[in-house]
Image (tube, helix red, strand yellow):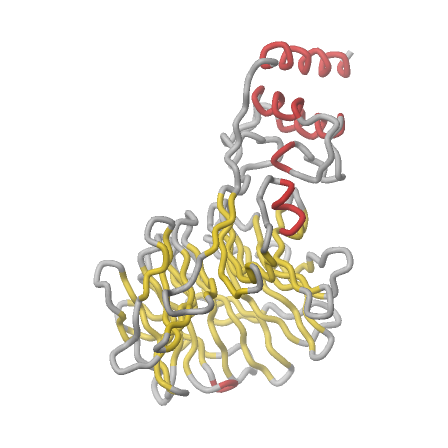
Length: 412
């Protein structure tokens, strides 16, 4: 009787919602453009809600950090006093603090720009080191992380309230660089330099710098991004000249490879959402053919050149060569590529979020989700937002079974 009960429940949903018109936010891609005298833009970081993008673009006077919003476009943040260039690498979760480096020639210092001051603050250098650069910040922009020094003599740092703390090196190592921090700034991740090769690391004040190791068969690893709570880390394992492969590390399971797409020979992970469920990066197909990807626990890895058009995004003129970061809520991804042959940064907004079975993105699985699945029954996938819940390439009764198991739940 239980199978019949399930069918009757579905029939009730159909009869109740047969005339309901469901509307899903339409994802869109936006060209970040250039400065008036420039020829390119490069996206590096994105705020938690996807409303702010930072990076760098060129001008007639040299490279300049930008802060982009949909309302204001590219804002030139200038340079440190006396400097000839600036590069933007990261942004706080609230979008109000931008970090990077600014200098002249081979000499540069880490900076911190805030919307409140409208100016760059020179963060200085570690004792005895000539240079520094900042790559990431916490949610409020009060903690800044980066590296100071020359090549393998770099030491990762965490800057808070005017004090730059040397984070040292992994056990037996010679140096390090920090690339990202958790939402509260208590967990820092990056790359450590050891005699055996580069090692992804996770640092806290309690544990110091812990090496995450490498996957079997790989000689180096680097951690690029970390979840809000510091318990999910992404990056890549690499070897010269073999290539690279993306990884996802969790505090409970350690490091796992999540592979590459069919036909791809390499992958790297550059960004992770706040809860660790969405990862963005790039895959290489050989012959300098690179595409951006998005990974989720329900989608697996998807080439954005396939996934975005399935969501209705027009990619005419675009080559999305790689994704640089994903917003904390998973609704926006940024990256770089070309538009009609010109180098441009880009942002895709309005991406589906939520959990398996939640097709209308209201953070629960109910009758309206069943109705949306019915609308797409028999169509081709894989498009999670339209109902391919088992990611097998089409939408059929198996997807109803997946949704039935989640019916009545609230997404976390």
